[in-house]
Structure formats: C-alpha cells, structure tokens
Amino acid sequence: MSQEQQAVARARKAFETGRSKCLEHRIRQLQNLQLLFTERQTEIADAIKKDLNKSEQGTQLYETLGLEGEISLAIRKLKEWAAPRSVEKNLLTLSDTIYIKPEPLGVVLIIGAWNYPWAVTIQPLIGAIAAGNAAVVKPSEVCVHTAKVMERLLPLYIDKELYPVVTGGVPETQELLRQRFDHIFYTGNSTVGKIIMEAAAKNLTPVTLELGGKSPCYIDKNCDISLACRRITWGKYTNCGQTCIAPDYILCEPSIQDRVIAEVKKSIKEFYTDNPKTCPDYGRIINQRHFKRIMEMVTDSTIAAGGENDESDCYIAPTVLRDVKPEAKVMQDEIFGPLLPILSVSGLEDAIKFINKREKPLALYVFSTDKKVIDKMRDETSSGGFLANDCLVHFSLSSLPFGGVGNSGMGCYHGKFSFDQLSHLRSCLVKQLKMEGPNSMRYPPHTAKKLGW
Ligand code: NAD
Image (cartoon, rainbow, N blue to C red; front, side):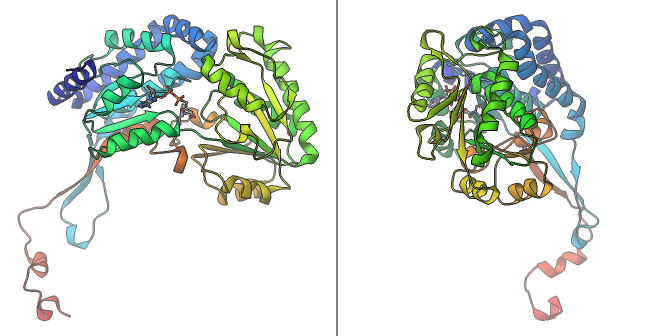
C-alpha cells in the first residue's frame, strides 16, 4: 500500500470507530487545534516568513486570528448546529415528528493552496471536525516550509488517526485522488479544479471547489477616489497580490485614470515606503516559476508605477499598468501577483457589459457613493461575493458564505456554512403506527369514489 492509501485507510478505520461523531470529542479536537495556534505561533510565522516573506504580524492578521475566531465560534455553536432542525409540516404529517438531522459525511479529503496556507487548509478542517468527519489533510507542496510544519504539528495536537496529514506534490495528490472519499474540498486554480472534479466523479464524490479568477473592480467617477484607491491598494498588494479575492484589475472612465494612478502611488508609498523591497510588510512571489509567469504578463502593457524586480529574490514591486487593452497578456488569466491594470470603460453600463462577457469572478468590487450605482452593479452581474467600497473583508465574516460561482468555484464555507457543507442534511420523518384512516386514500385501488373526484 502507498503511504497515501495507508493514510486514507487509517482515517476510514478511525471514522468507523464512531468517535469523531461524539460532540465532546469534536469539541476537544477543536480546543486542541486552538491550542496549536496559541502555542506554536512562532514556528508557524517563521515558516511563512521563509515561504512568502510575510511578517509575523501579517501572519497573525491574515492567517491565524481568523482561524482562532472560526474555532471559537464552532466550539460555541456546535451543539446548536448539530441538533435536529425542526421543519414545517403539512396536513398529512401534522401528528408526525419531522426534522433535519445533520450527519457526518465520512472521510473528507482537504487539498490546500499555498497563498494563505494555514487559512485555506485549516479552515475546511475546522468544518470537517465540527461536522464529525475524518479528514485527510494535504497541504500545498509549493509552500515548502509551511507544509513541513503542518505535517509535524497537527499530529501533536489532534487525533492523528482521524486527521492524518499527507505531504507531497502532484503524484501524491493524484494517488490520493485515486482513493475513495466522501467529500473532496479543494482550494486552488480552476484548471486543477477540473482534474479534481473528474477524479471525484468516478465515485460520485461531492466536491467543494474554492477556485480563483479575475475579480474586477469598478471605480465610479463620483466616489471619493483617494479613499477608494487606498483600500484597493491594500486589497491588491497584500501578500504581494497573491490573494484569491484580490482586485485583479480596475475599470474606470478615462477622465479619472491619472487621478487613480496618482492615488494608488500615494498609498503604495504610505504602506510600503519608497523602497518596498526593504519593507517588512511587503511580501515576495512564492517561487521563480510564478515570478516568470507574472513578469511575462507585463511585456505588452505600459507601466505607470513600479515595475522594478529582482528574480533572485522573487521580488516584484507594486506595479500599476495604464491604458491596458482587453487583449493584453495581463488580461488573459488571473494575475495572482502585484500588477494592477487599469482599463477604460465609458461608464457603469459599459463596465457591466465588460464583466458579463467574462467568467463569473470570485469577488466583484464597486466603489461609489451612489446607491443606485452599487445596486445596479449587484443586480446585473454575478460573482461569488460582492463588495461595495472595500476589498477582501468579506472573507473575515463567519456569517457570510464564502465561495465562488461558475468558473470561480462551487460550494461555500466559513462559520455554519462549513458545518453544513461537510454534513449530510438528512431528512427524518417519524410516523406513529396508528391513524391509518387518512392514509387509505394513497393505497390502490385509486377509484374516483375513494378519492372523492
Ligand atoms: P497549488 O499549486 O498549491 O495547488 C493546489 C493544490 O492542488 C496543491 O495541494 C497541489 O498539490 C494540488 N495540485 C496541483 N496540481 C495538481 C494536479 N495536476 N493534479 C492533482 N493535484 C494537483 O495552488 P494554486 O492552484 O497555484 O493556487 C492558486 C490558485 O488558487 C489561484 O487561482 C487562487 O485564486 C486560488 N485560490 C482560491 C482560494 C479560494 O478560497 N477560493 C483561496 C486561495 C487560492
């Protein structure tokens, strides 16, 4: 048996003992996970620093604080989430007991991405544990140091039979995909998303696909452009642009382009100084393959700010591209790097048309002081999430389902949505063995006389 087969078999065997279903066991596991984040903050931050040059504060802000919040919420609400949910009855079932009982799915495979390696791998795990499943955890091999730390730390804190960690690259992930799971939760790019779905189809395994895409950002000329650009600059260059919901490109009228460029430049300086390369809050591209991919995107566009780079350090300065054409290289795929293209549109209608001609994005941003503009953009487009006058922050709300639509993914999670996503919502109806009278109509023979028609 391969190590992947062994891990899945161990998780399945542990699931069959029934211990993951016990609410006390689930809560204990979540508390232990909580402890991991309080006791091992330094090890976690050191590894992410090596992988992505994130500062310790950055790691806390964008990775662990959110996870700790999700764990506390799950611990606090678990009894309520797992309890039978009563539903409305109809005339024929008035005296019956009817409810929805969430039950675990079984063994879940969690495949994580590298850009926020703890957030995107552990957040689904919180849902899997809370819902009473076993889970095989596969961190991304691209964040080399973090994958090792995760592999070492998780078994020290949580049940290593129920929640084994499997490391490795594409061959190991593909070997995992040949095994049978009860759910696959994948975070990563859409191309691999299709491979995951194909593999899952062989066993009719349901999937959650947390994918990416190009998230547009429309700036209305009548908004507070300075404030809008400050928030967009933050959303774009955090983690060096390697954020699934980063605003990918700006759409605005040509009359405000110069102002937008000037304001973004001002904010870049405010956040990352005149020399972002030496700024502790400015990250690095994950590896040279991605560095080359991003630099290739710049070759047919005009640089309005930034553009400096250093391949040996995987450094690309916060960069703004002006007068970008829809055919430009930077507009063909998700950028996932610190390039901010600005494209001209003639107004709101034109921006909506532009967005609707492309795949449904993971996030859609609009900046405007006019409620009518915001509502029109929301009502005439579709995206995983919709934000007016800010970027990224919807990810941090446990009360909102987080996920894509169309090419940006399927299924959703965070808070109770994670619990429901990784549960089977079982319909239960318990009838009494009496009151047979009203049932007689359904039994043949279906004569008109009996039915009263
Ligand atoms: P990645 O390269 O780390 O791949 C993700 C996972 O897929 C890894 O665990 C890897 O082992 C596995 N994998 C890669 N190629 C495979 C193959 N051929 N067969 C089977 N498994 C394979 O990460 P990535 O895809 O570069 O991540 C970036 C993408 O993820 C971006 O598109 C981003 O928008 C998206 N993303 C989405 C979210 C979200 O929540 N929706 C969050 C983070 C990242």
